[in-house]
Image 1: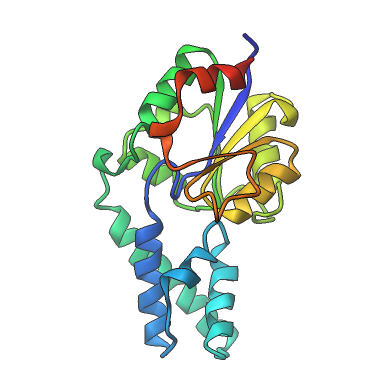
Image 2 (image 1 turned 90 degrees about the vertical axis):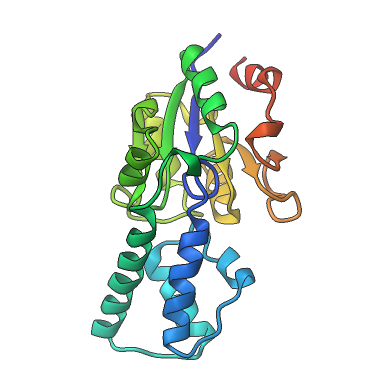
Length: 217
């Protein structure tokens, strides 16, 4: 069995921190008298903090000074961090540990490829940090998804060629990044949203051992 690289996004794949991003962005948008819906939040998944704030300001036809822009970024992140300090193992999405442990037992490479700048503290909170051989997050990349940089760096960290890597993602931008990196893309979520992925599963409970073995061979 060859050693492949399995690269996991964080938000919406390992933990559902998307709900905390939603609350923090919604509060920020509302403070600027901008409406913010769950549908709009979907468009921010996998997108950097700066680009997310730009989108919200565009939706509300708002302009702010460069200083105010920076302050808003800090405000959003501080509120988000307050939510995640309360996280624990109960926040891990169903069957995530089963998948990780199976891959570890079979000597597969495991990396994180996330836009989050808070990936390490989150993995520490939920006690999964030790399961990852390589972590590439928002602190170590310049270009956000759909640019493939985050996944190419993860492949490099695992010392596995991109064509031998498999990516688990819950966002359109992430699936596009995986496809651009020439990796197998597996969508975790809704088929009608993630239709560009090679495979789509509602969550990890739908992933069988047989399917994982087929990816390894």
